[in-house]
Length: 246
Image (cartoon, rainbow, N blue to C red; front, side, top):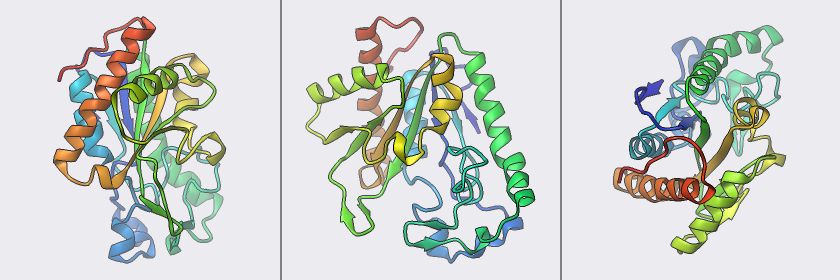
């Protein structure tokens, strides 16, 4: 899905895990209602933050429309967890025993249209900057996570460095680099595919989902993250139109 396509900003905001929708052809992947609406199926709150962040930056947003349990847009189609059989404690019966042909079919229907749309938006943006938005659970495998916002990067840390410096000066929140995930967890696919190889500035945001469960929380978090991004660009002297409209 595309939002704010006329936005003049250099930023391109992405939310790969925006939806928990599972098309009927996949039989709900054998999941019960709880599992199909849980964090395993999507990133709760991330779409709301993405929508408001794009508005604050006057930037285009590109979002997924199908559950990551069908096909994860932040994984290469060849990855073993592109259609995972288990997410934390939740088993996904409909992904067990998938053939190469079935995986390829899902990639063609879900991954490729998203990839092409995002690539086109980046190609049509002057001095593009890729910003991906995700959320994570407060408790993972029974362990409490103290980090509240993760600022993630792969080989290119330029934007992440600037944002971390600004965040630590302006918030008392627990902001960490490459937490609760990092490159070693295989979460950098979108950044690598669409930004790192081309030299575009990029960053991945991970927000603890209890902080963005409600609309007012999403608005609040989007506002201060937009400020961090805008200030980072000013500090870095980056070319392009990235203005924070708050």
